[in-house]
Image 1 (cartoon, rainbow, N blue to C red):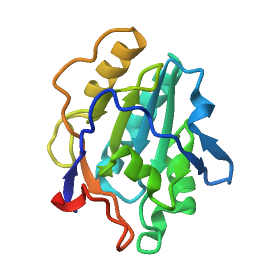
Image 2: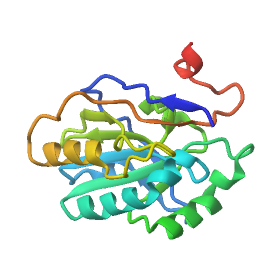
Image 3: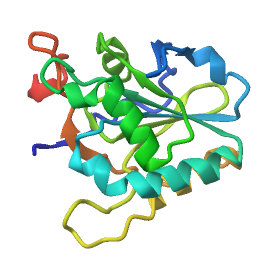
Image 4: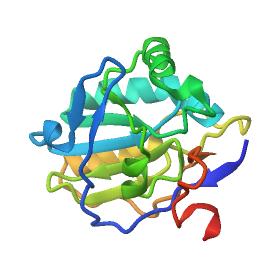
Length: 194
């Protein structure tokens, strides 16, 4: 288990477009969320212990904030040749076990992960109504084994601020998780310190 930090791309970055299928084959795109006052894009995967650690709290957060108008979408980008449990069948299992209420999409080419500069699971990107990046970073300070309760404090504060039209609290701390499992030869230039 390699703990990898998020890349923290520049605030103000425009949300990259995507067009990806969920495990049932329905294709979702950035435009499907156009009416929402804010959008959270998350990179997750089934087998990562960092994701498993926050899964219940994350599902609760999503249900609560979807009710406040936040659009939420998750993407998995791992190499399913080496990690088949992170493919569509594992995604269906994760949706069911966690009670996810948001679309969960499969980025088989890994191009969407690269466009967002996603590095780890979980990795969170919060965009305002103009789809400018206003928060990237951690769910909260809890990690597997550190004894800190899962609250979603950092992401909750950011979501409350963007939905309320207020600046996001600083500092923004990187998420930490398992590195995205890049297909051999498909690693982005920001992976591995390159």
